[in-house]
Length: 142
Image 1 (cartoon, rainbow, N blue to C red):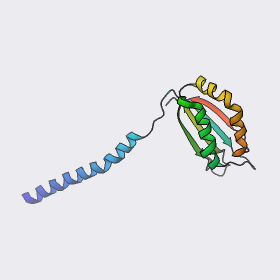
Image 2 (image 1 turned 90 degrees about the horizontal axis):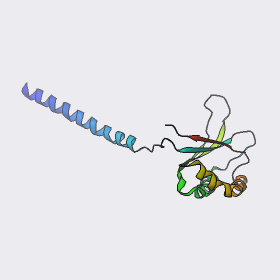
Image 3 (image 1 turned 90 degrees about the vertical axis):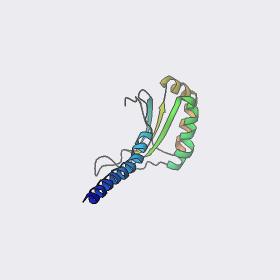
């Protein structure tokens, strides 16, 4: 009887220990996620979907966005590229083909970097799209 009790307690502790070890990597992964800092400025460049509009994601990812990121220098924290896949409402058209986002430290520094390069940036548009982008500048609050 004592042997069964000891064996049961041992198995219980072994199970709890194994369960805890399985959970730790997921917890560690969660802690390693990149968090965008509150107060950063987010510049979203959104390309609306419409009949006849095109978008070359490969060019945008390998040429256009790195070019613009290069103009931003140390003010740039990171940038992301999103490919539109669906609308949030079933059976409705895709709102945007793509969205490029720059996370920056300072809006004035961003504007100062973009201003002298605006013509080069716009001249590159036909290389990847025939859609006019919609730009939203916002502040990260969380």
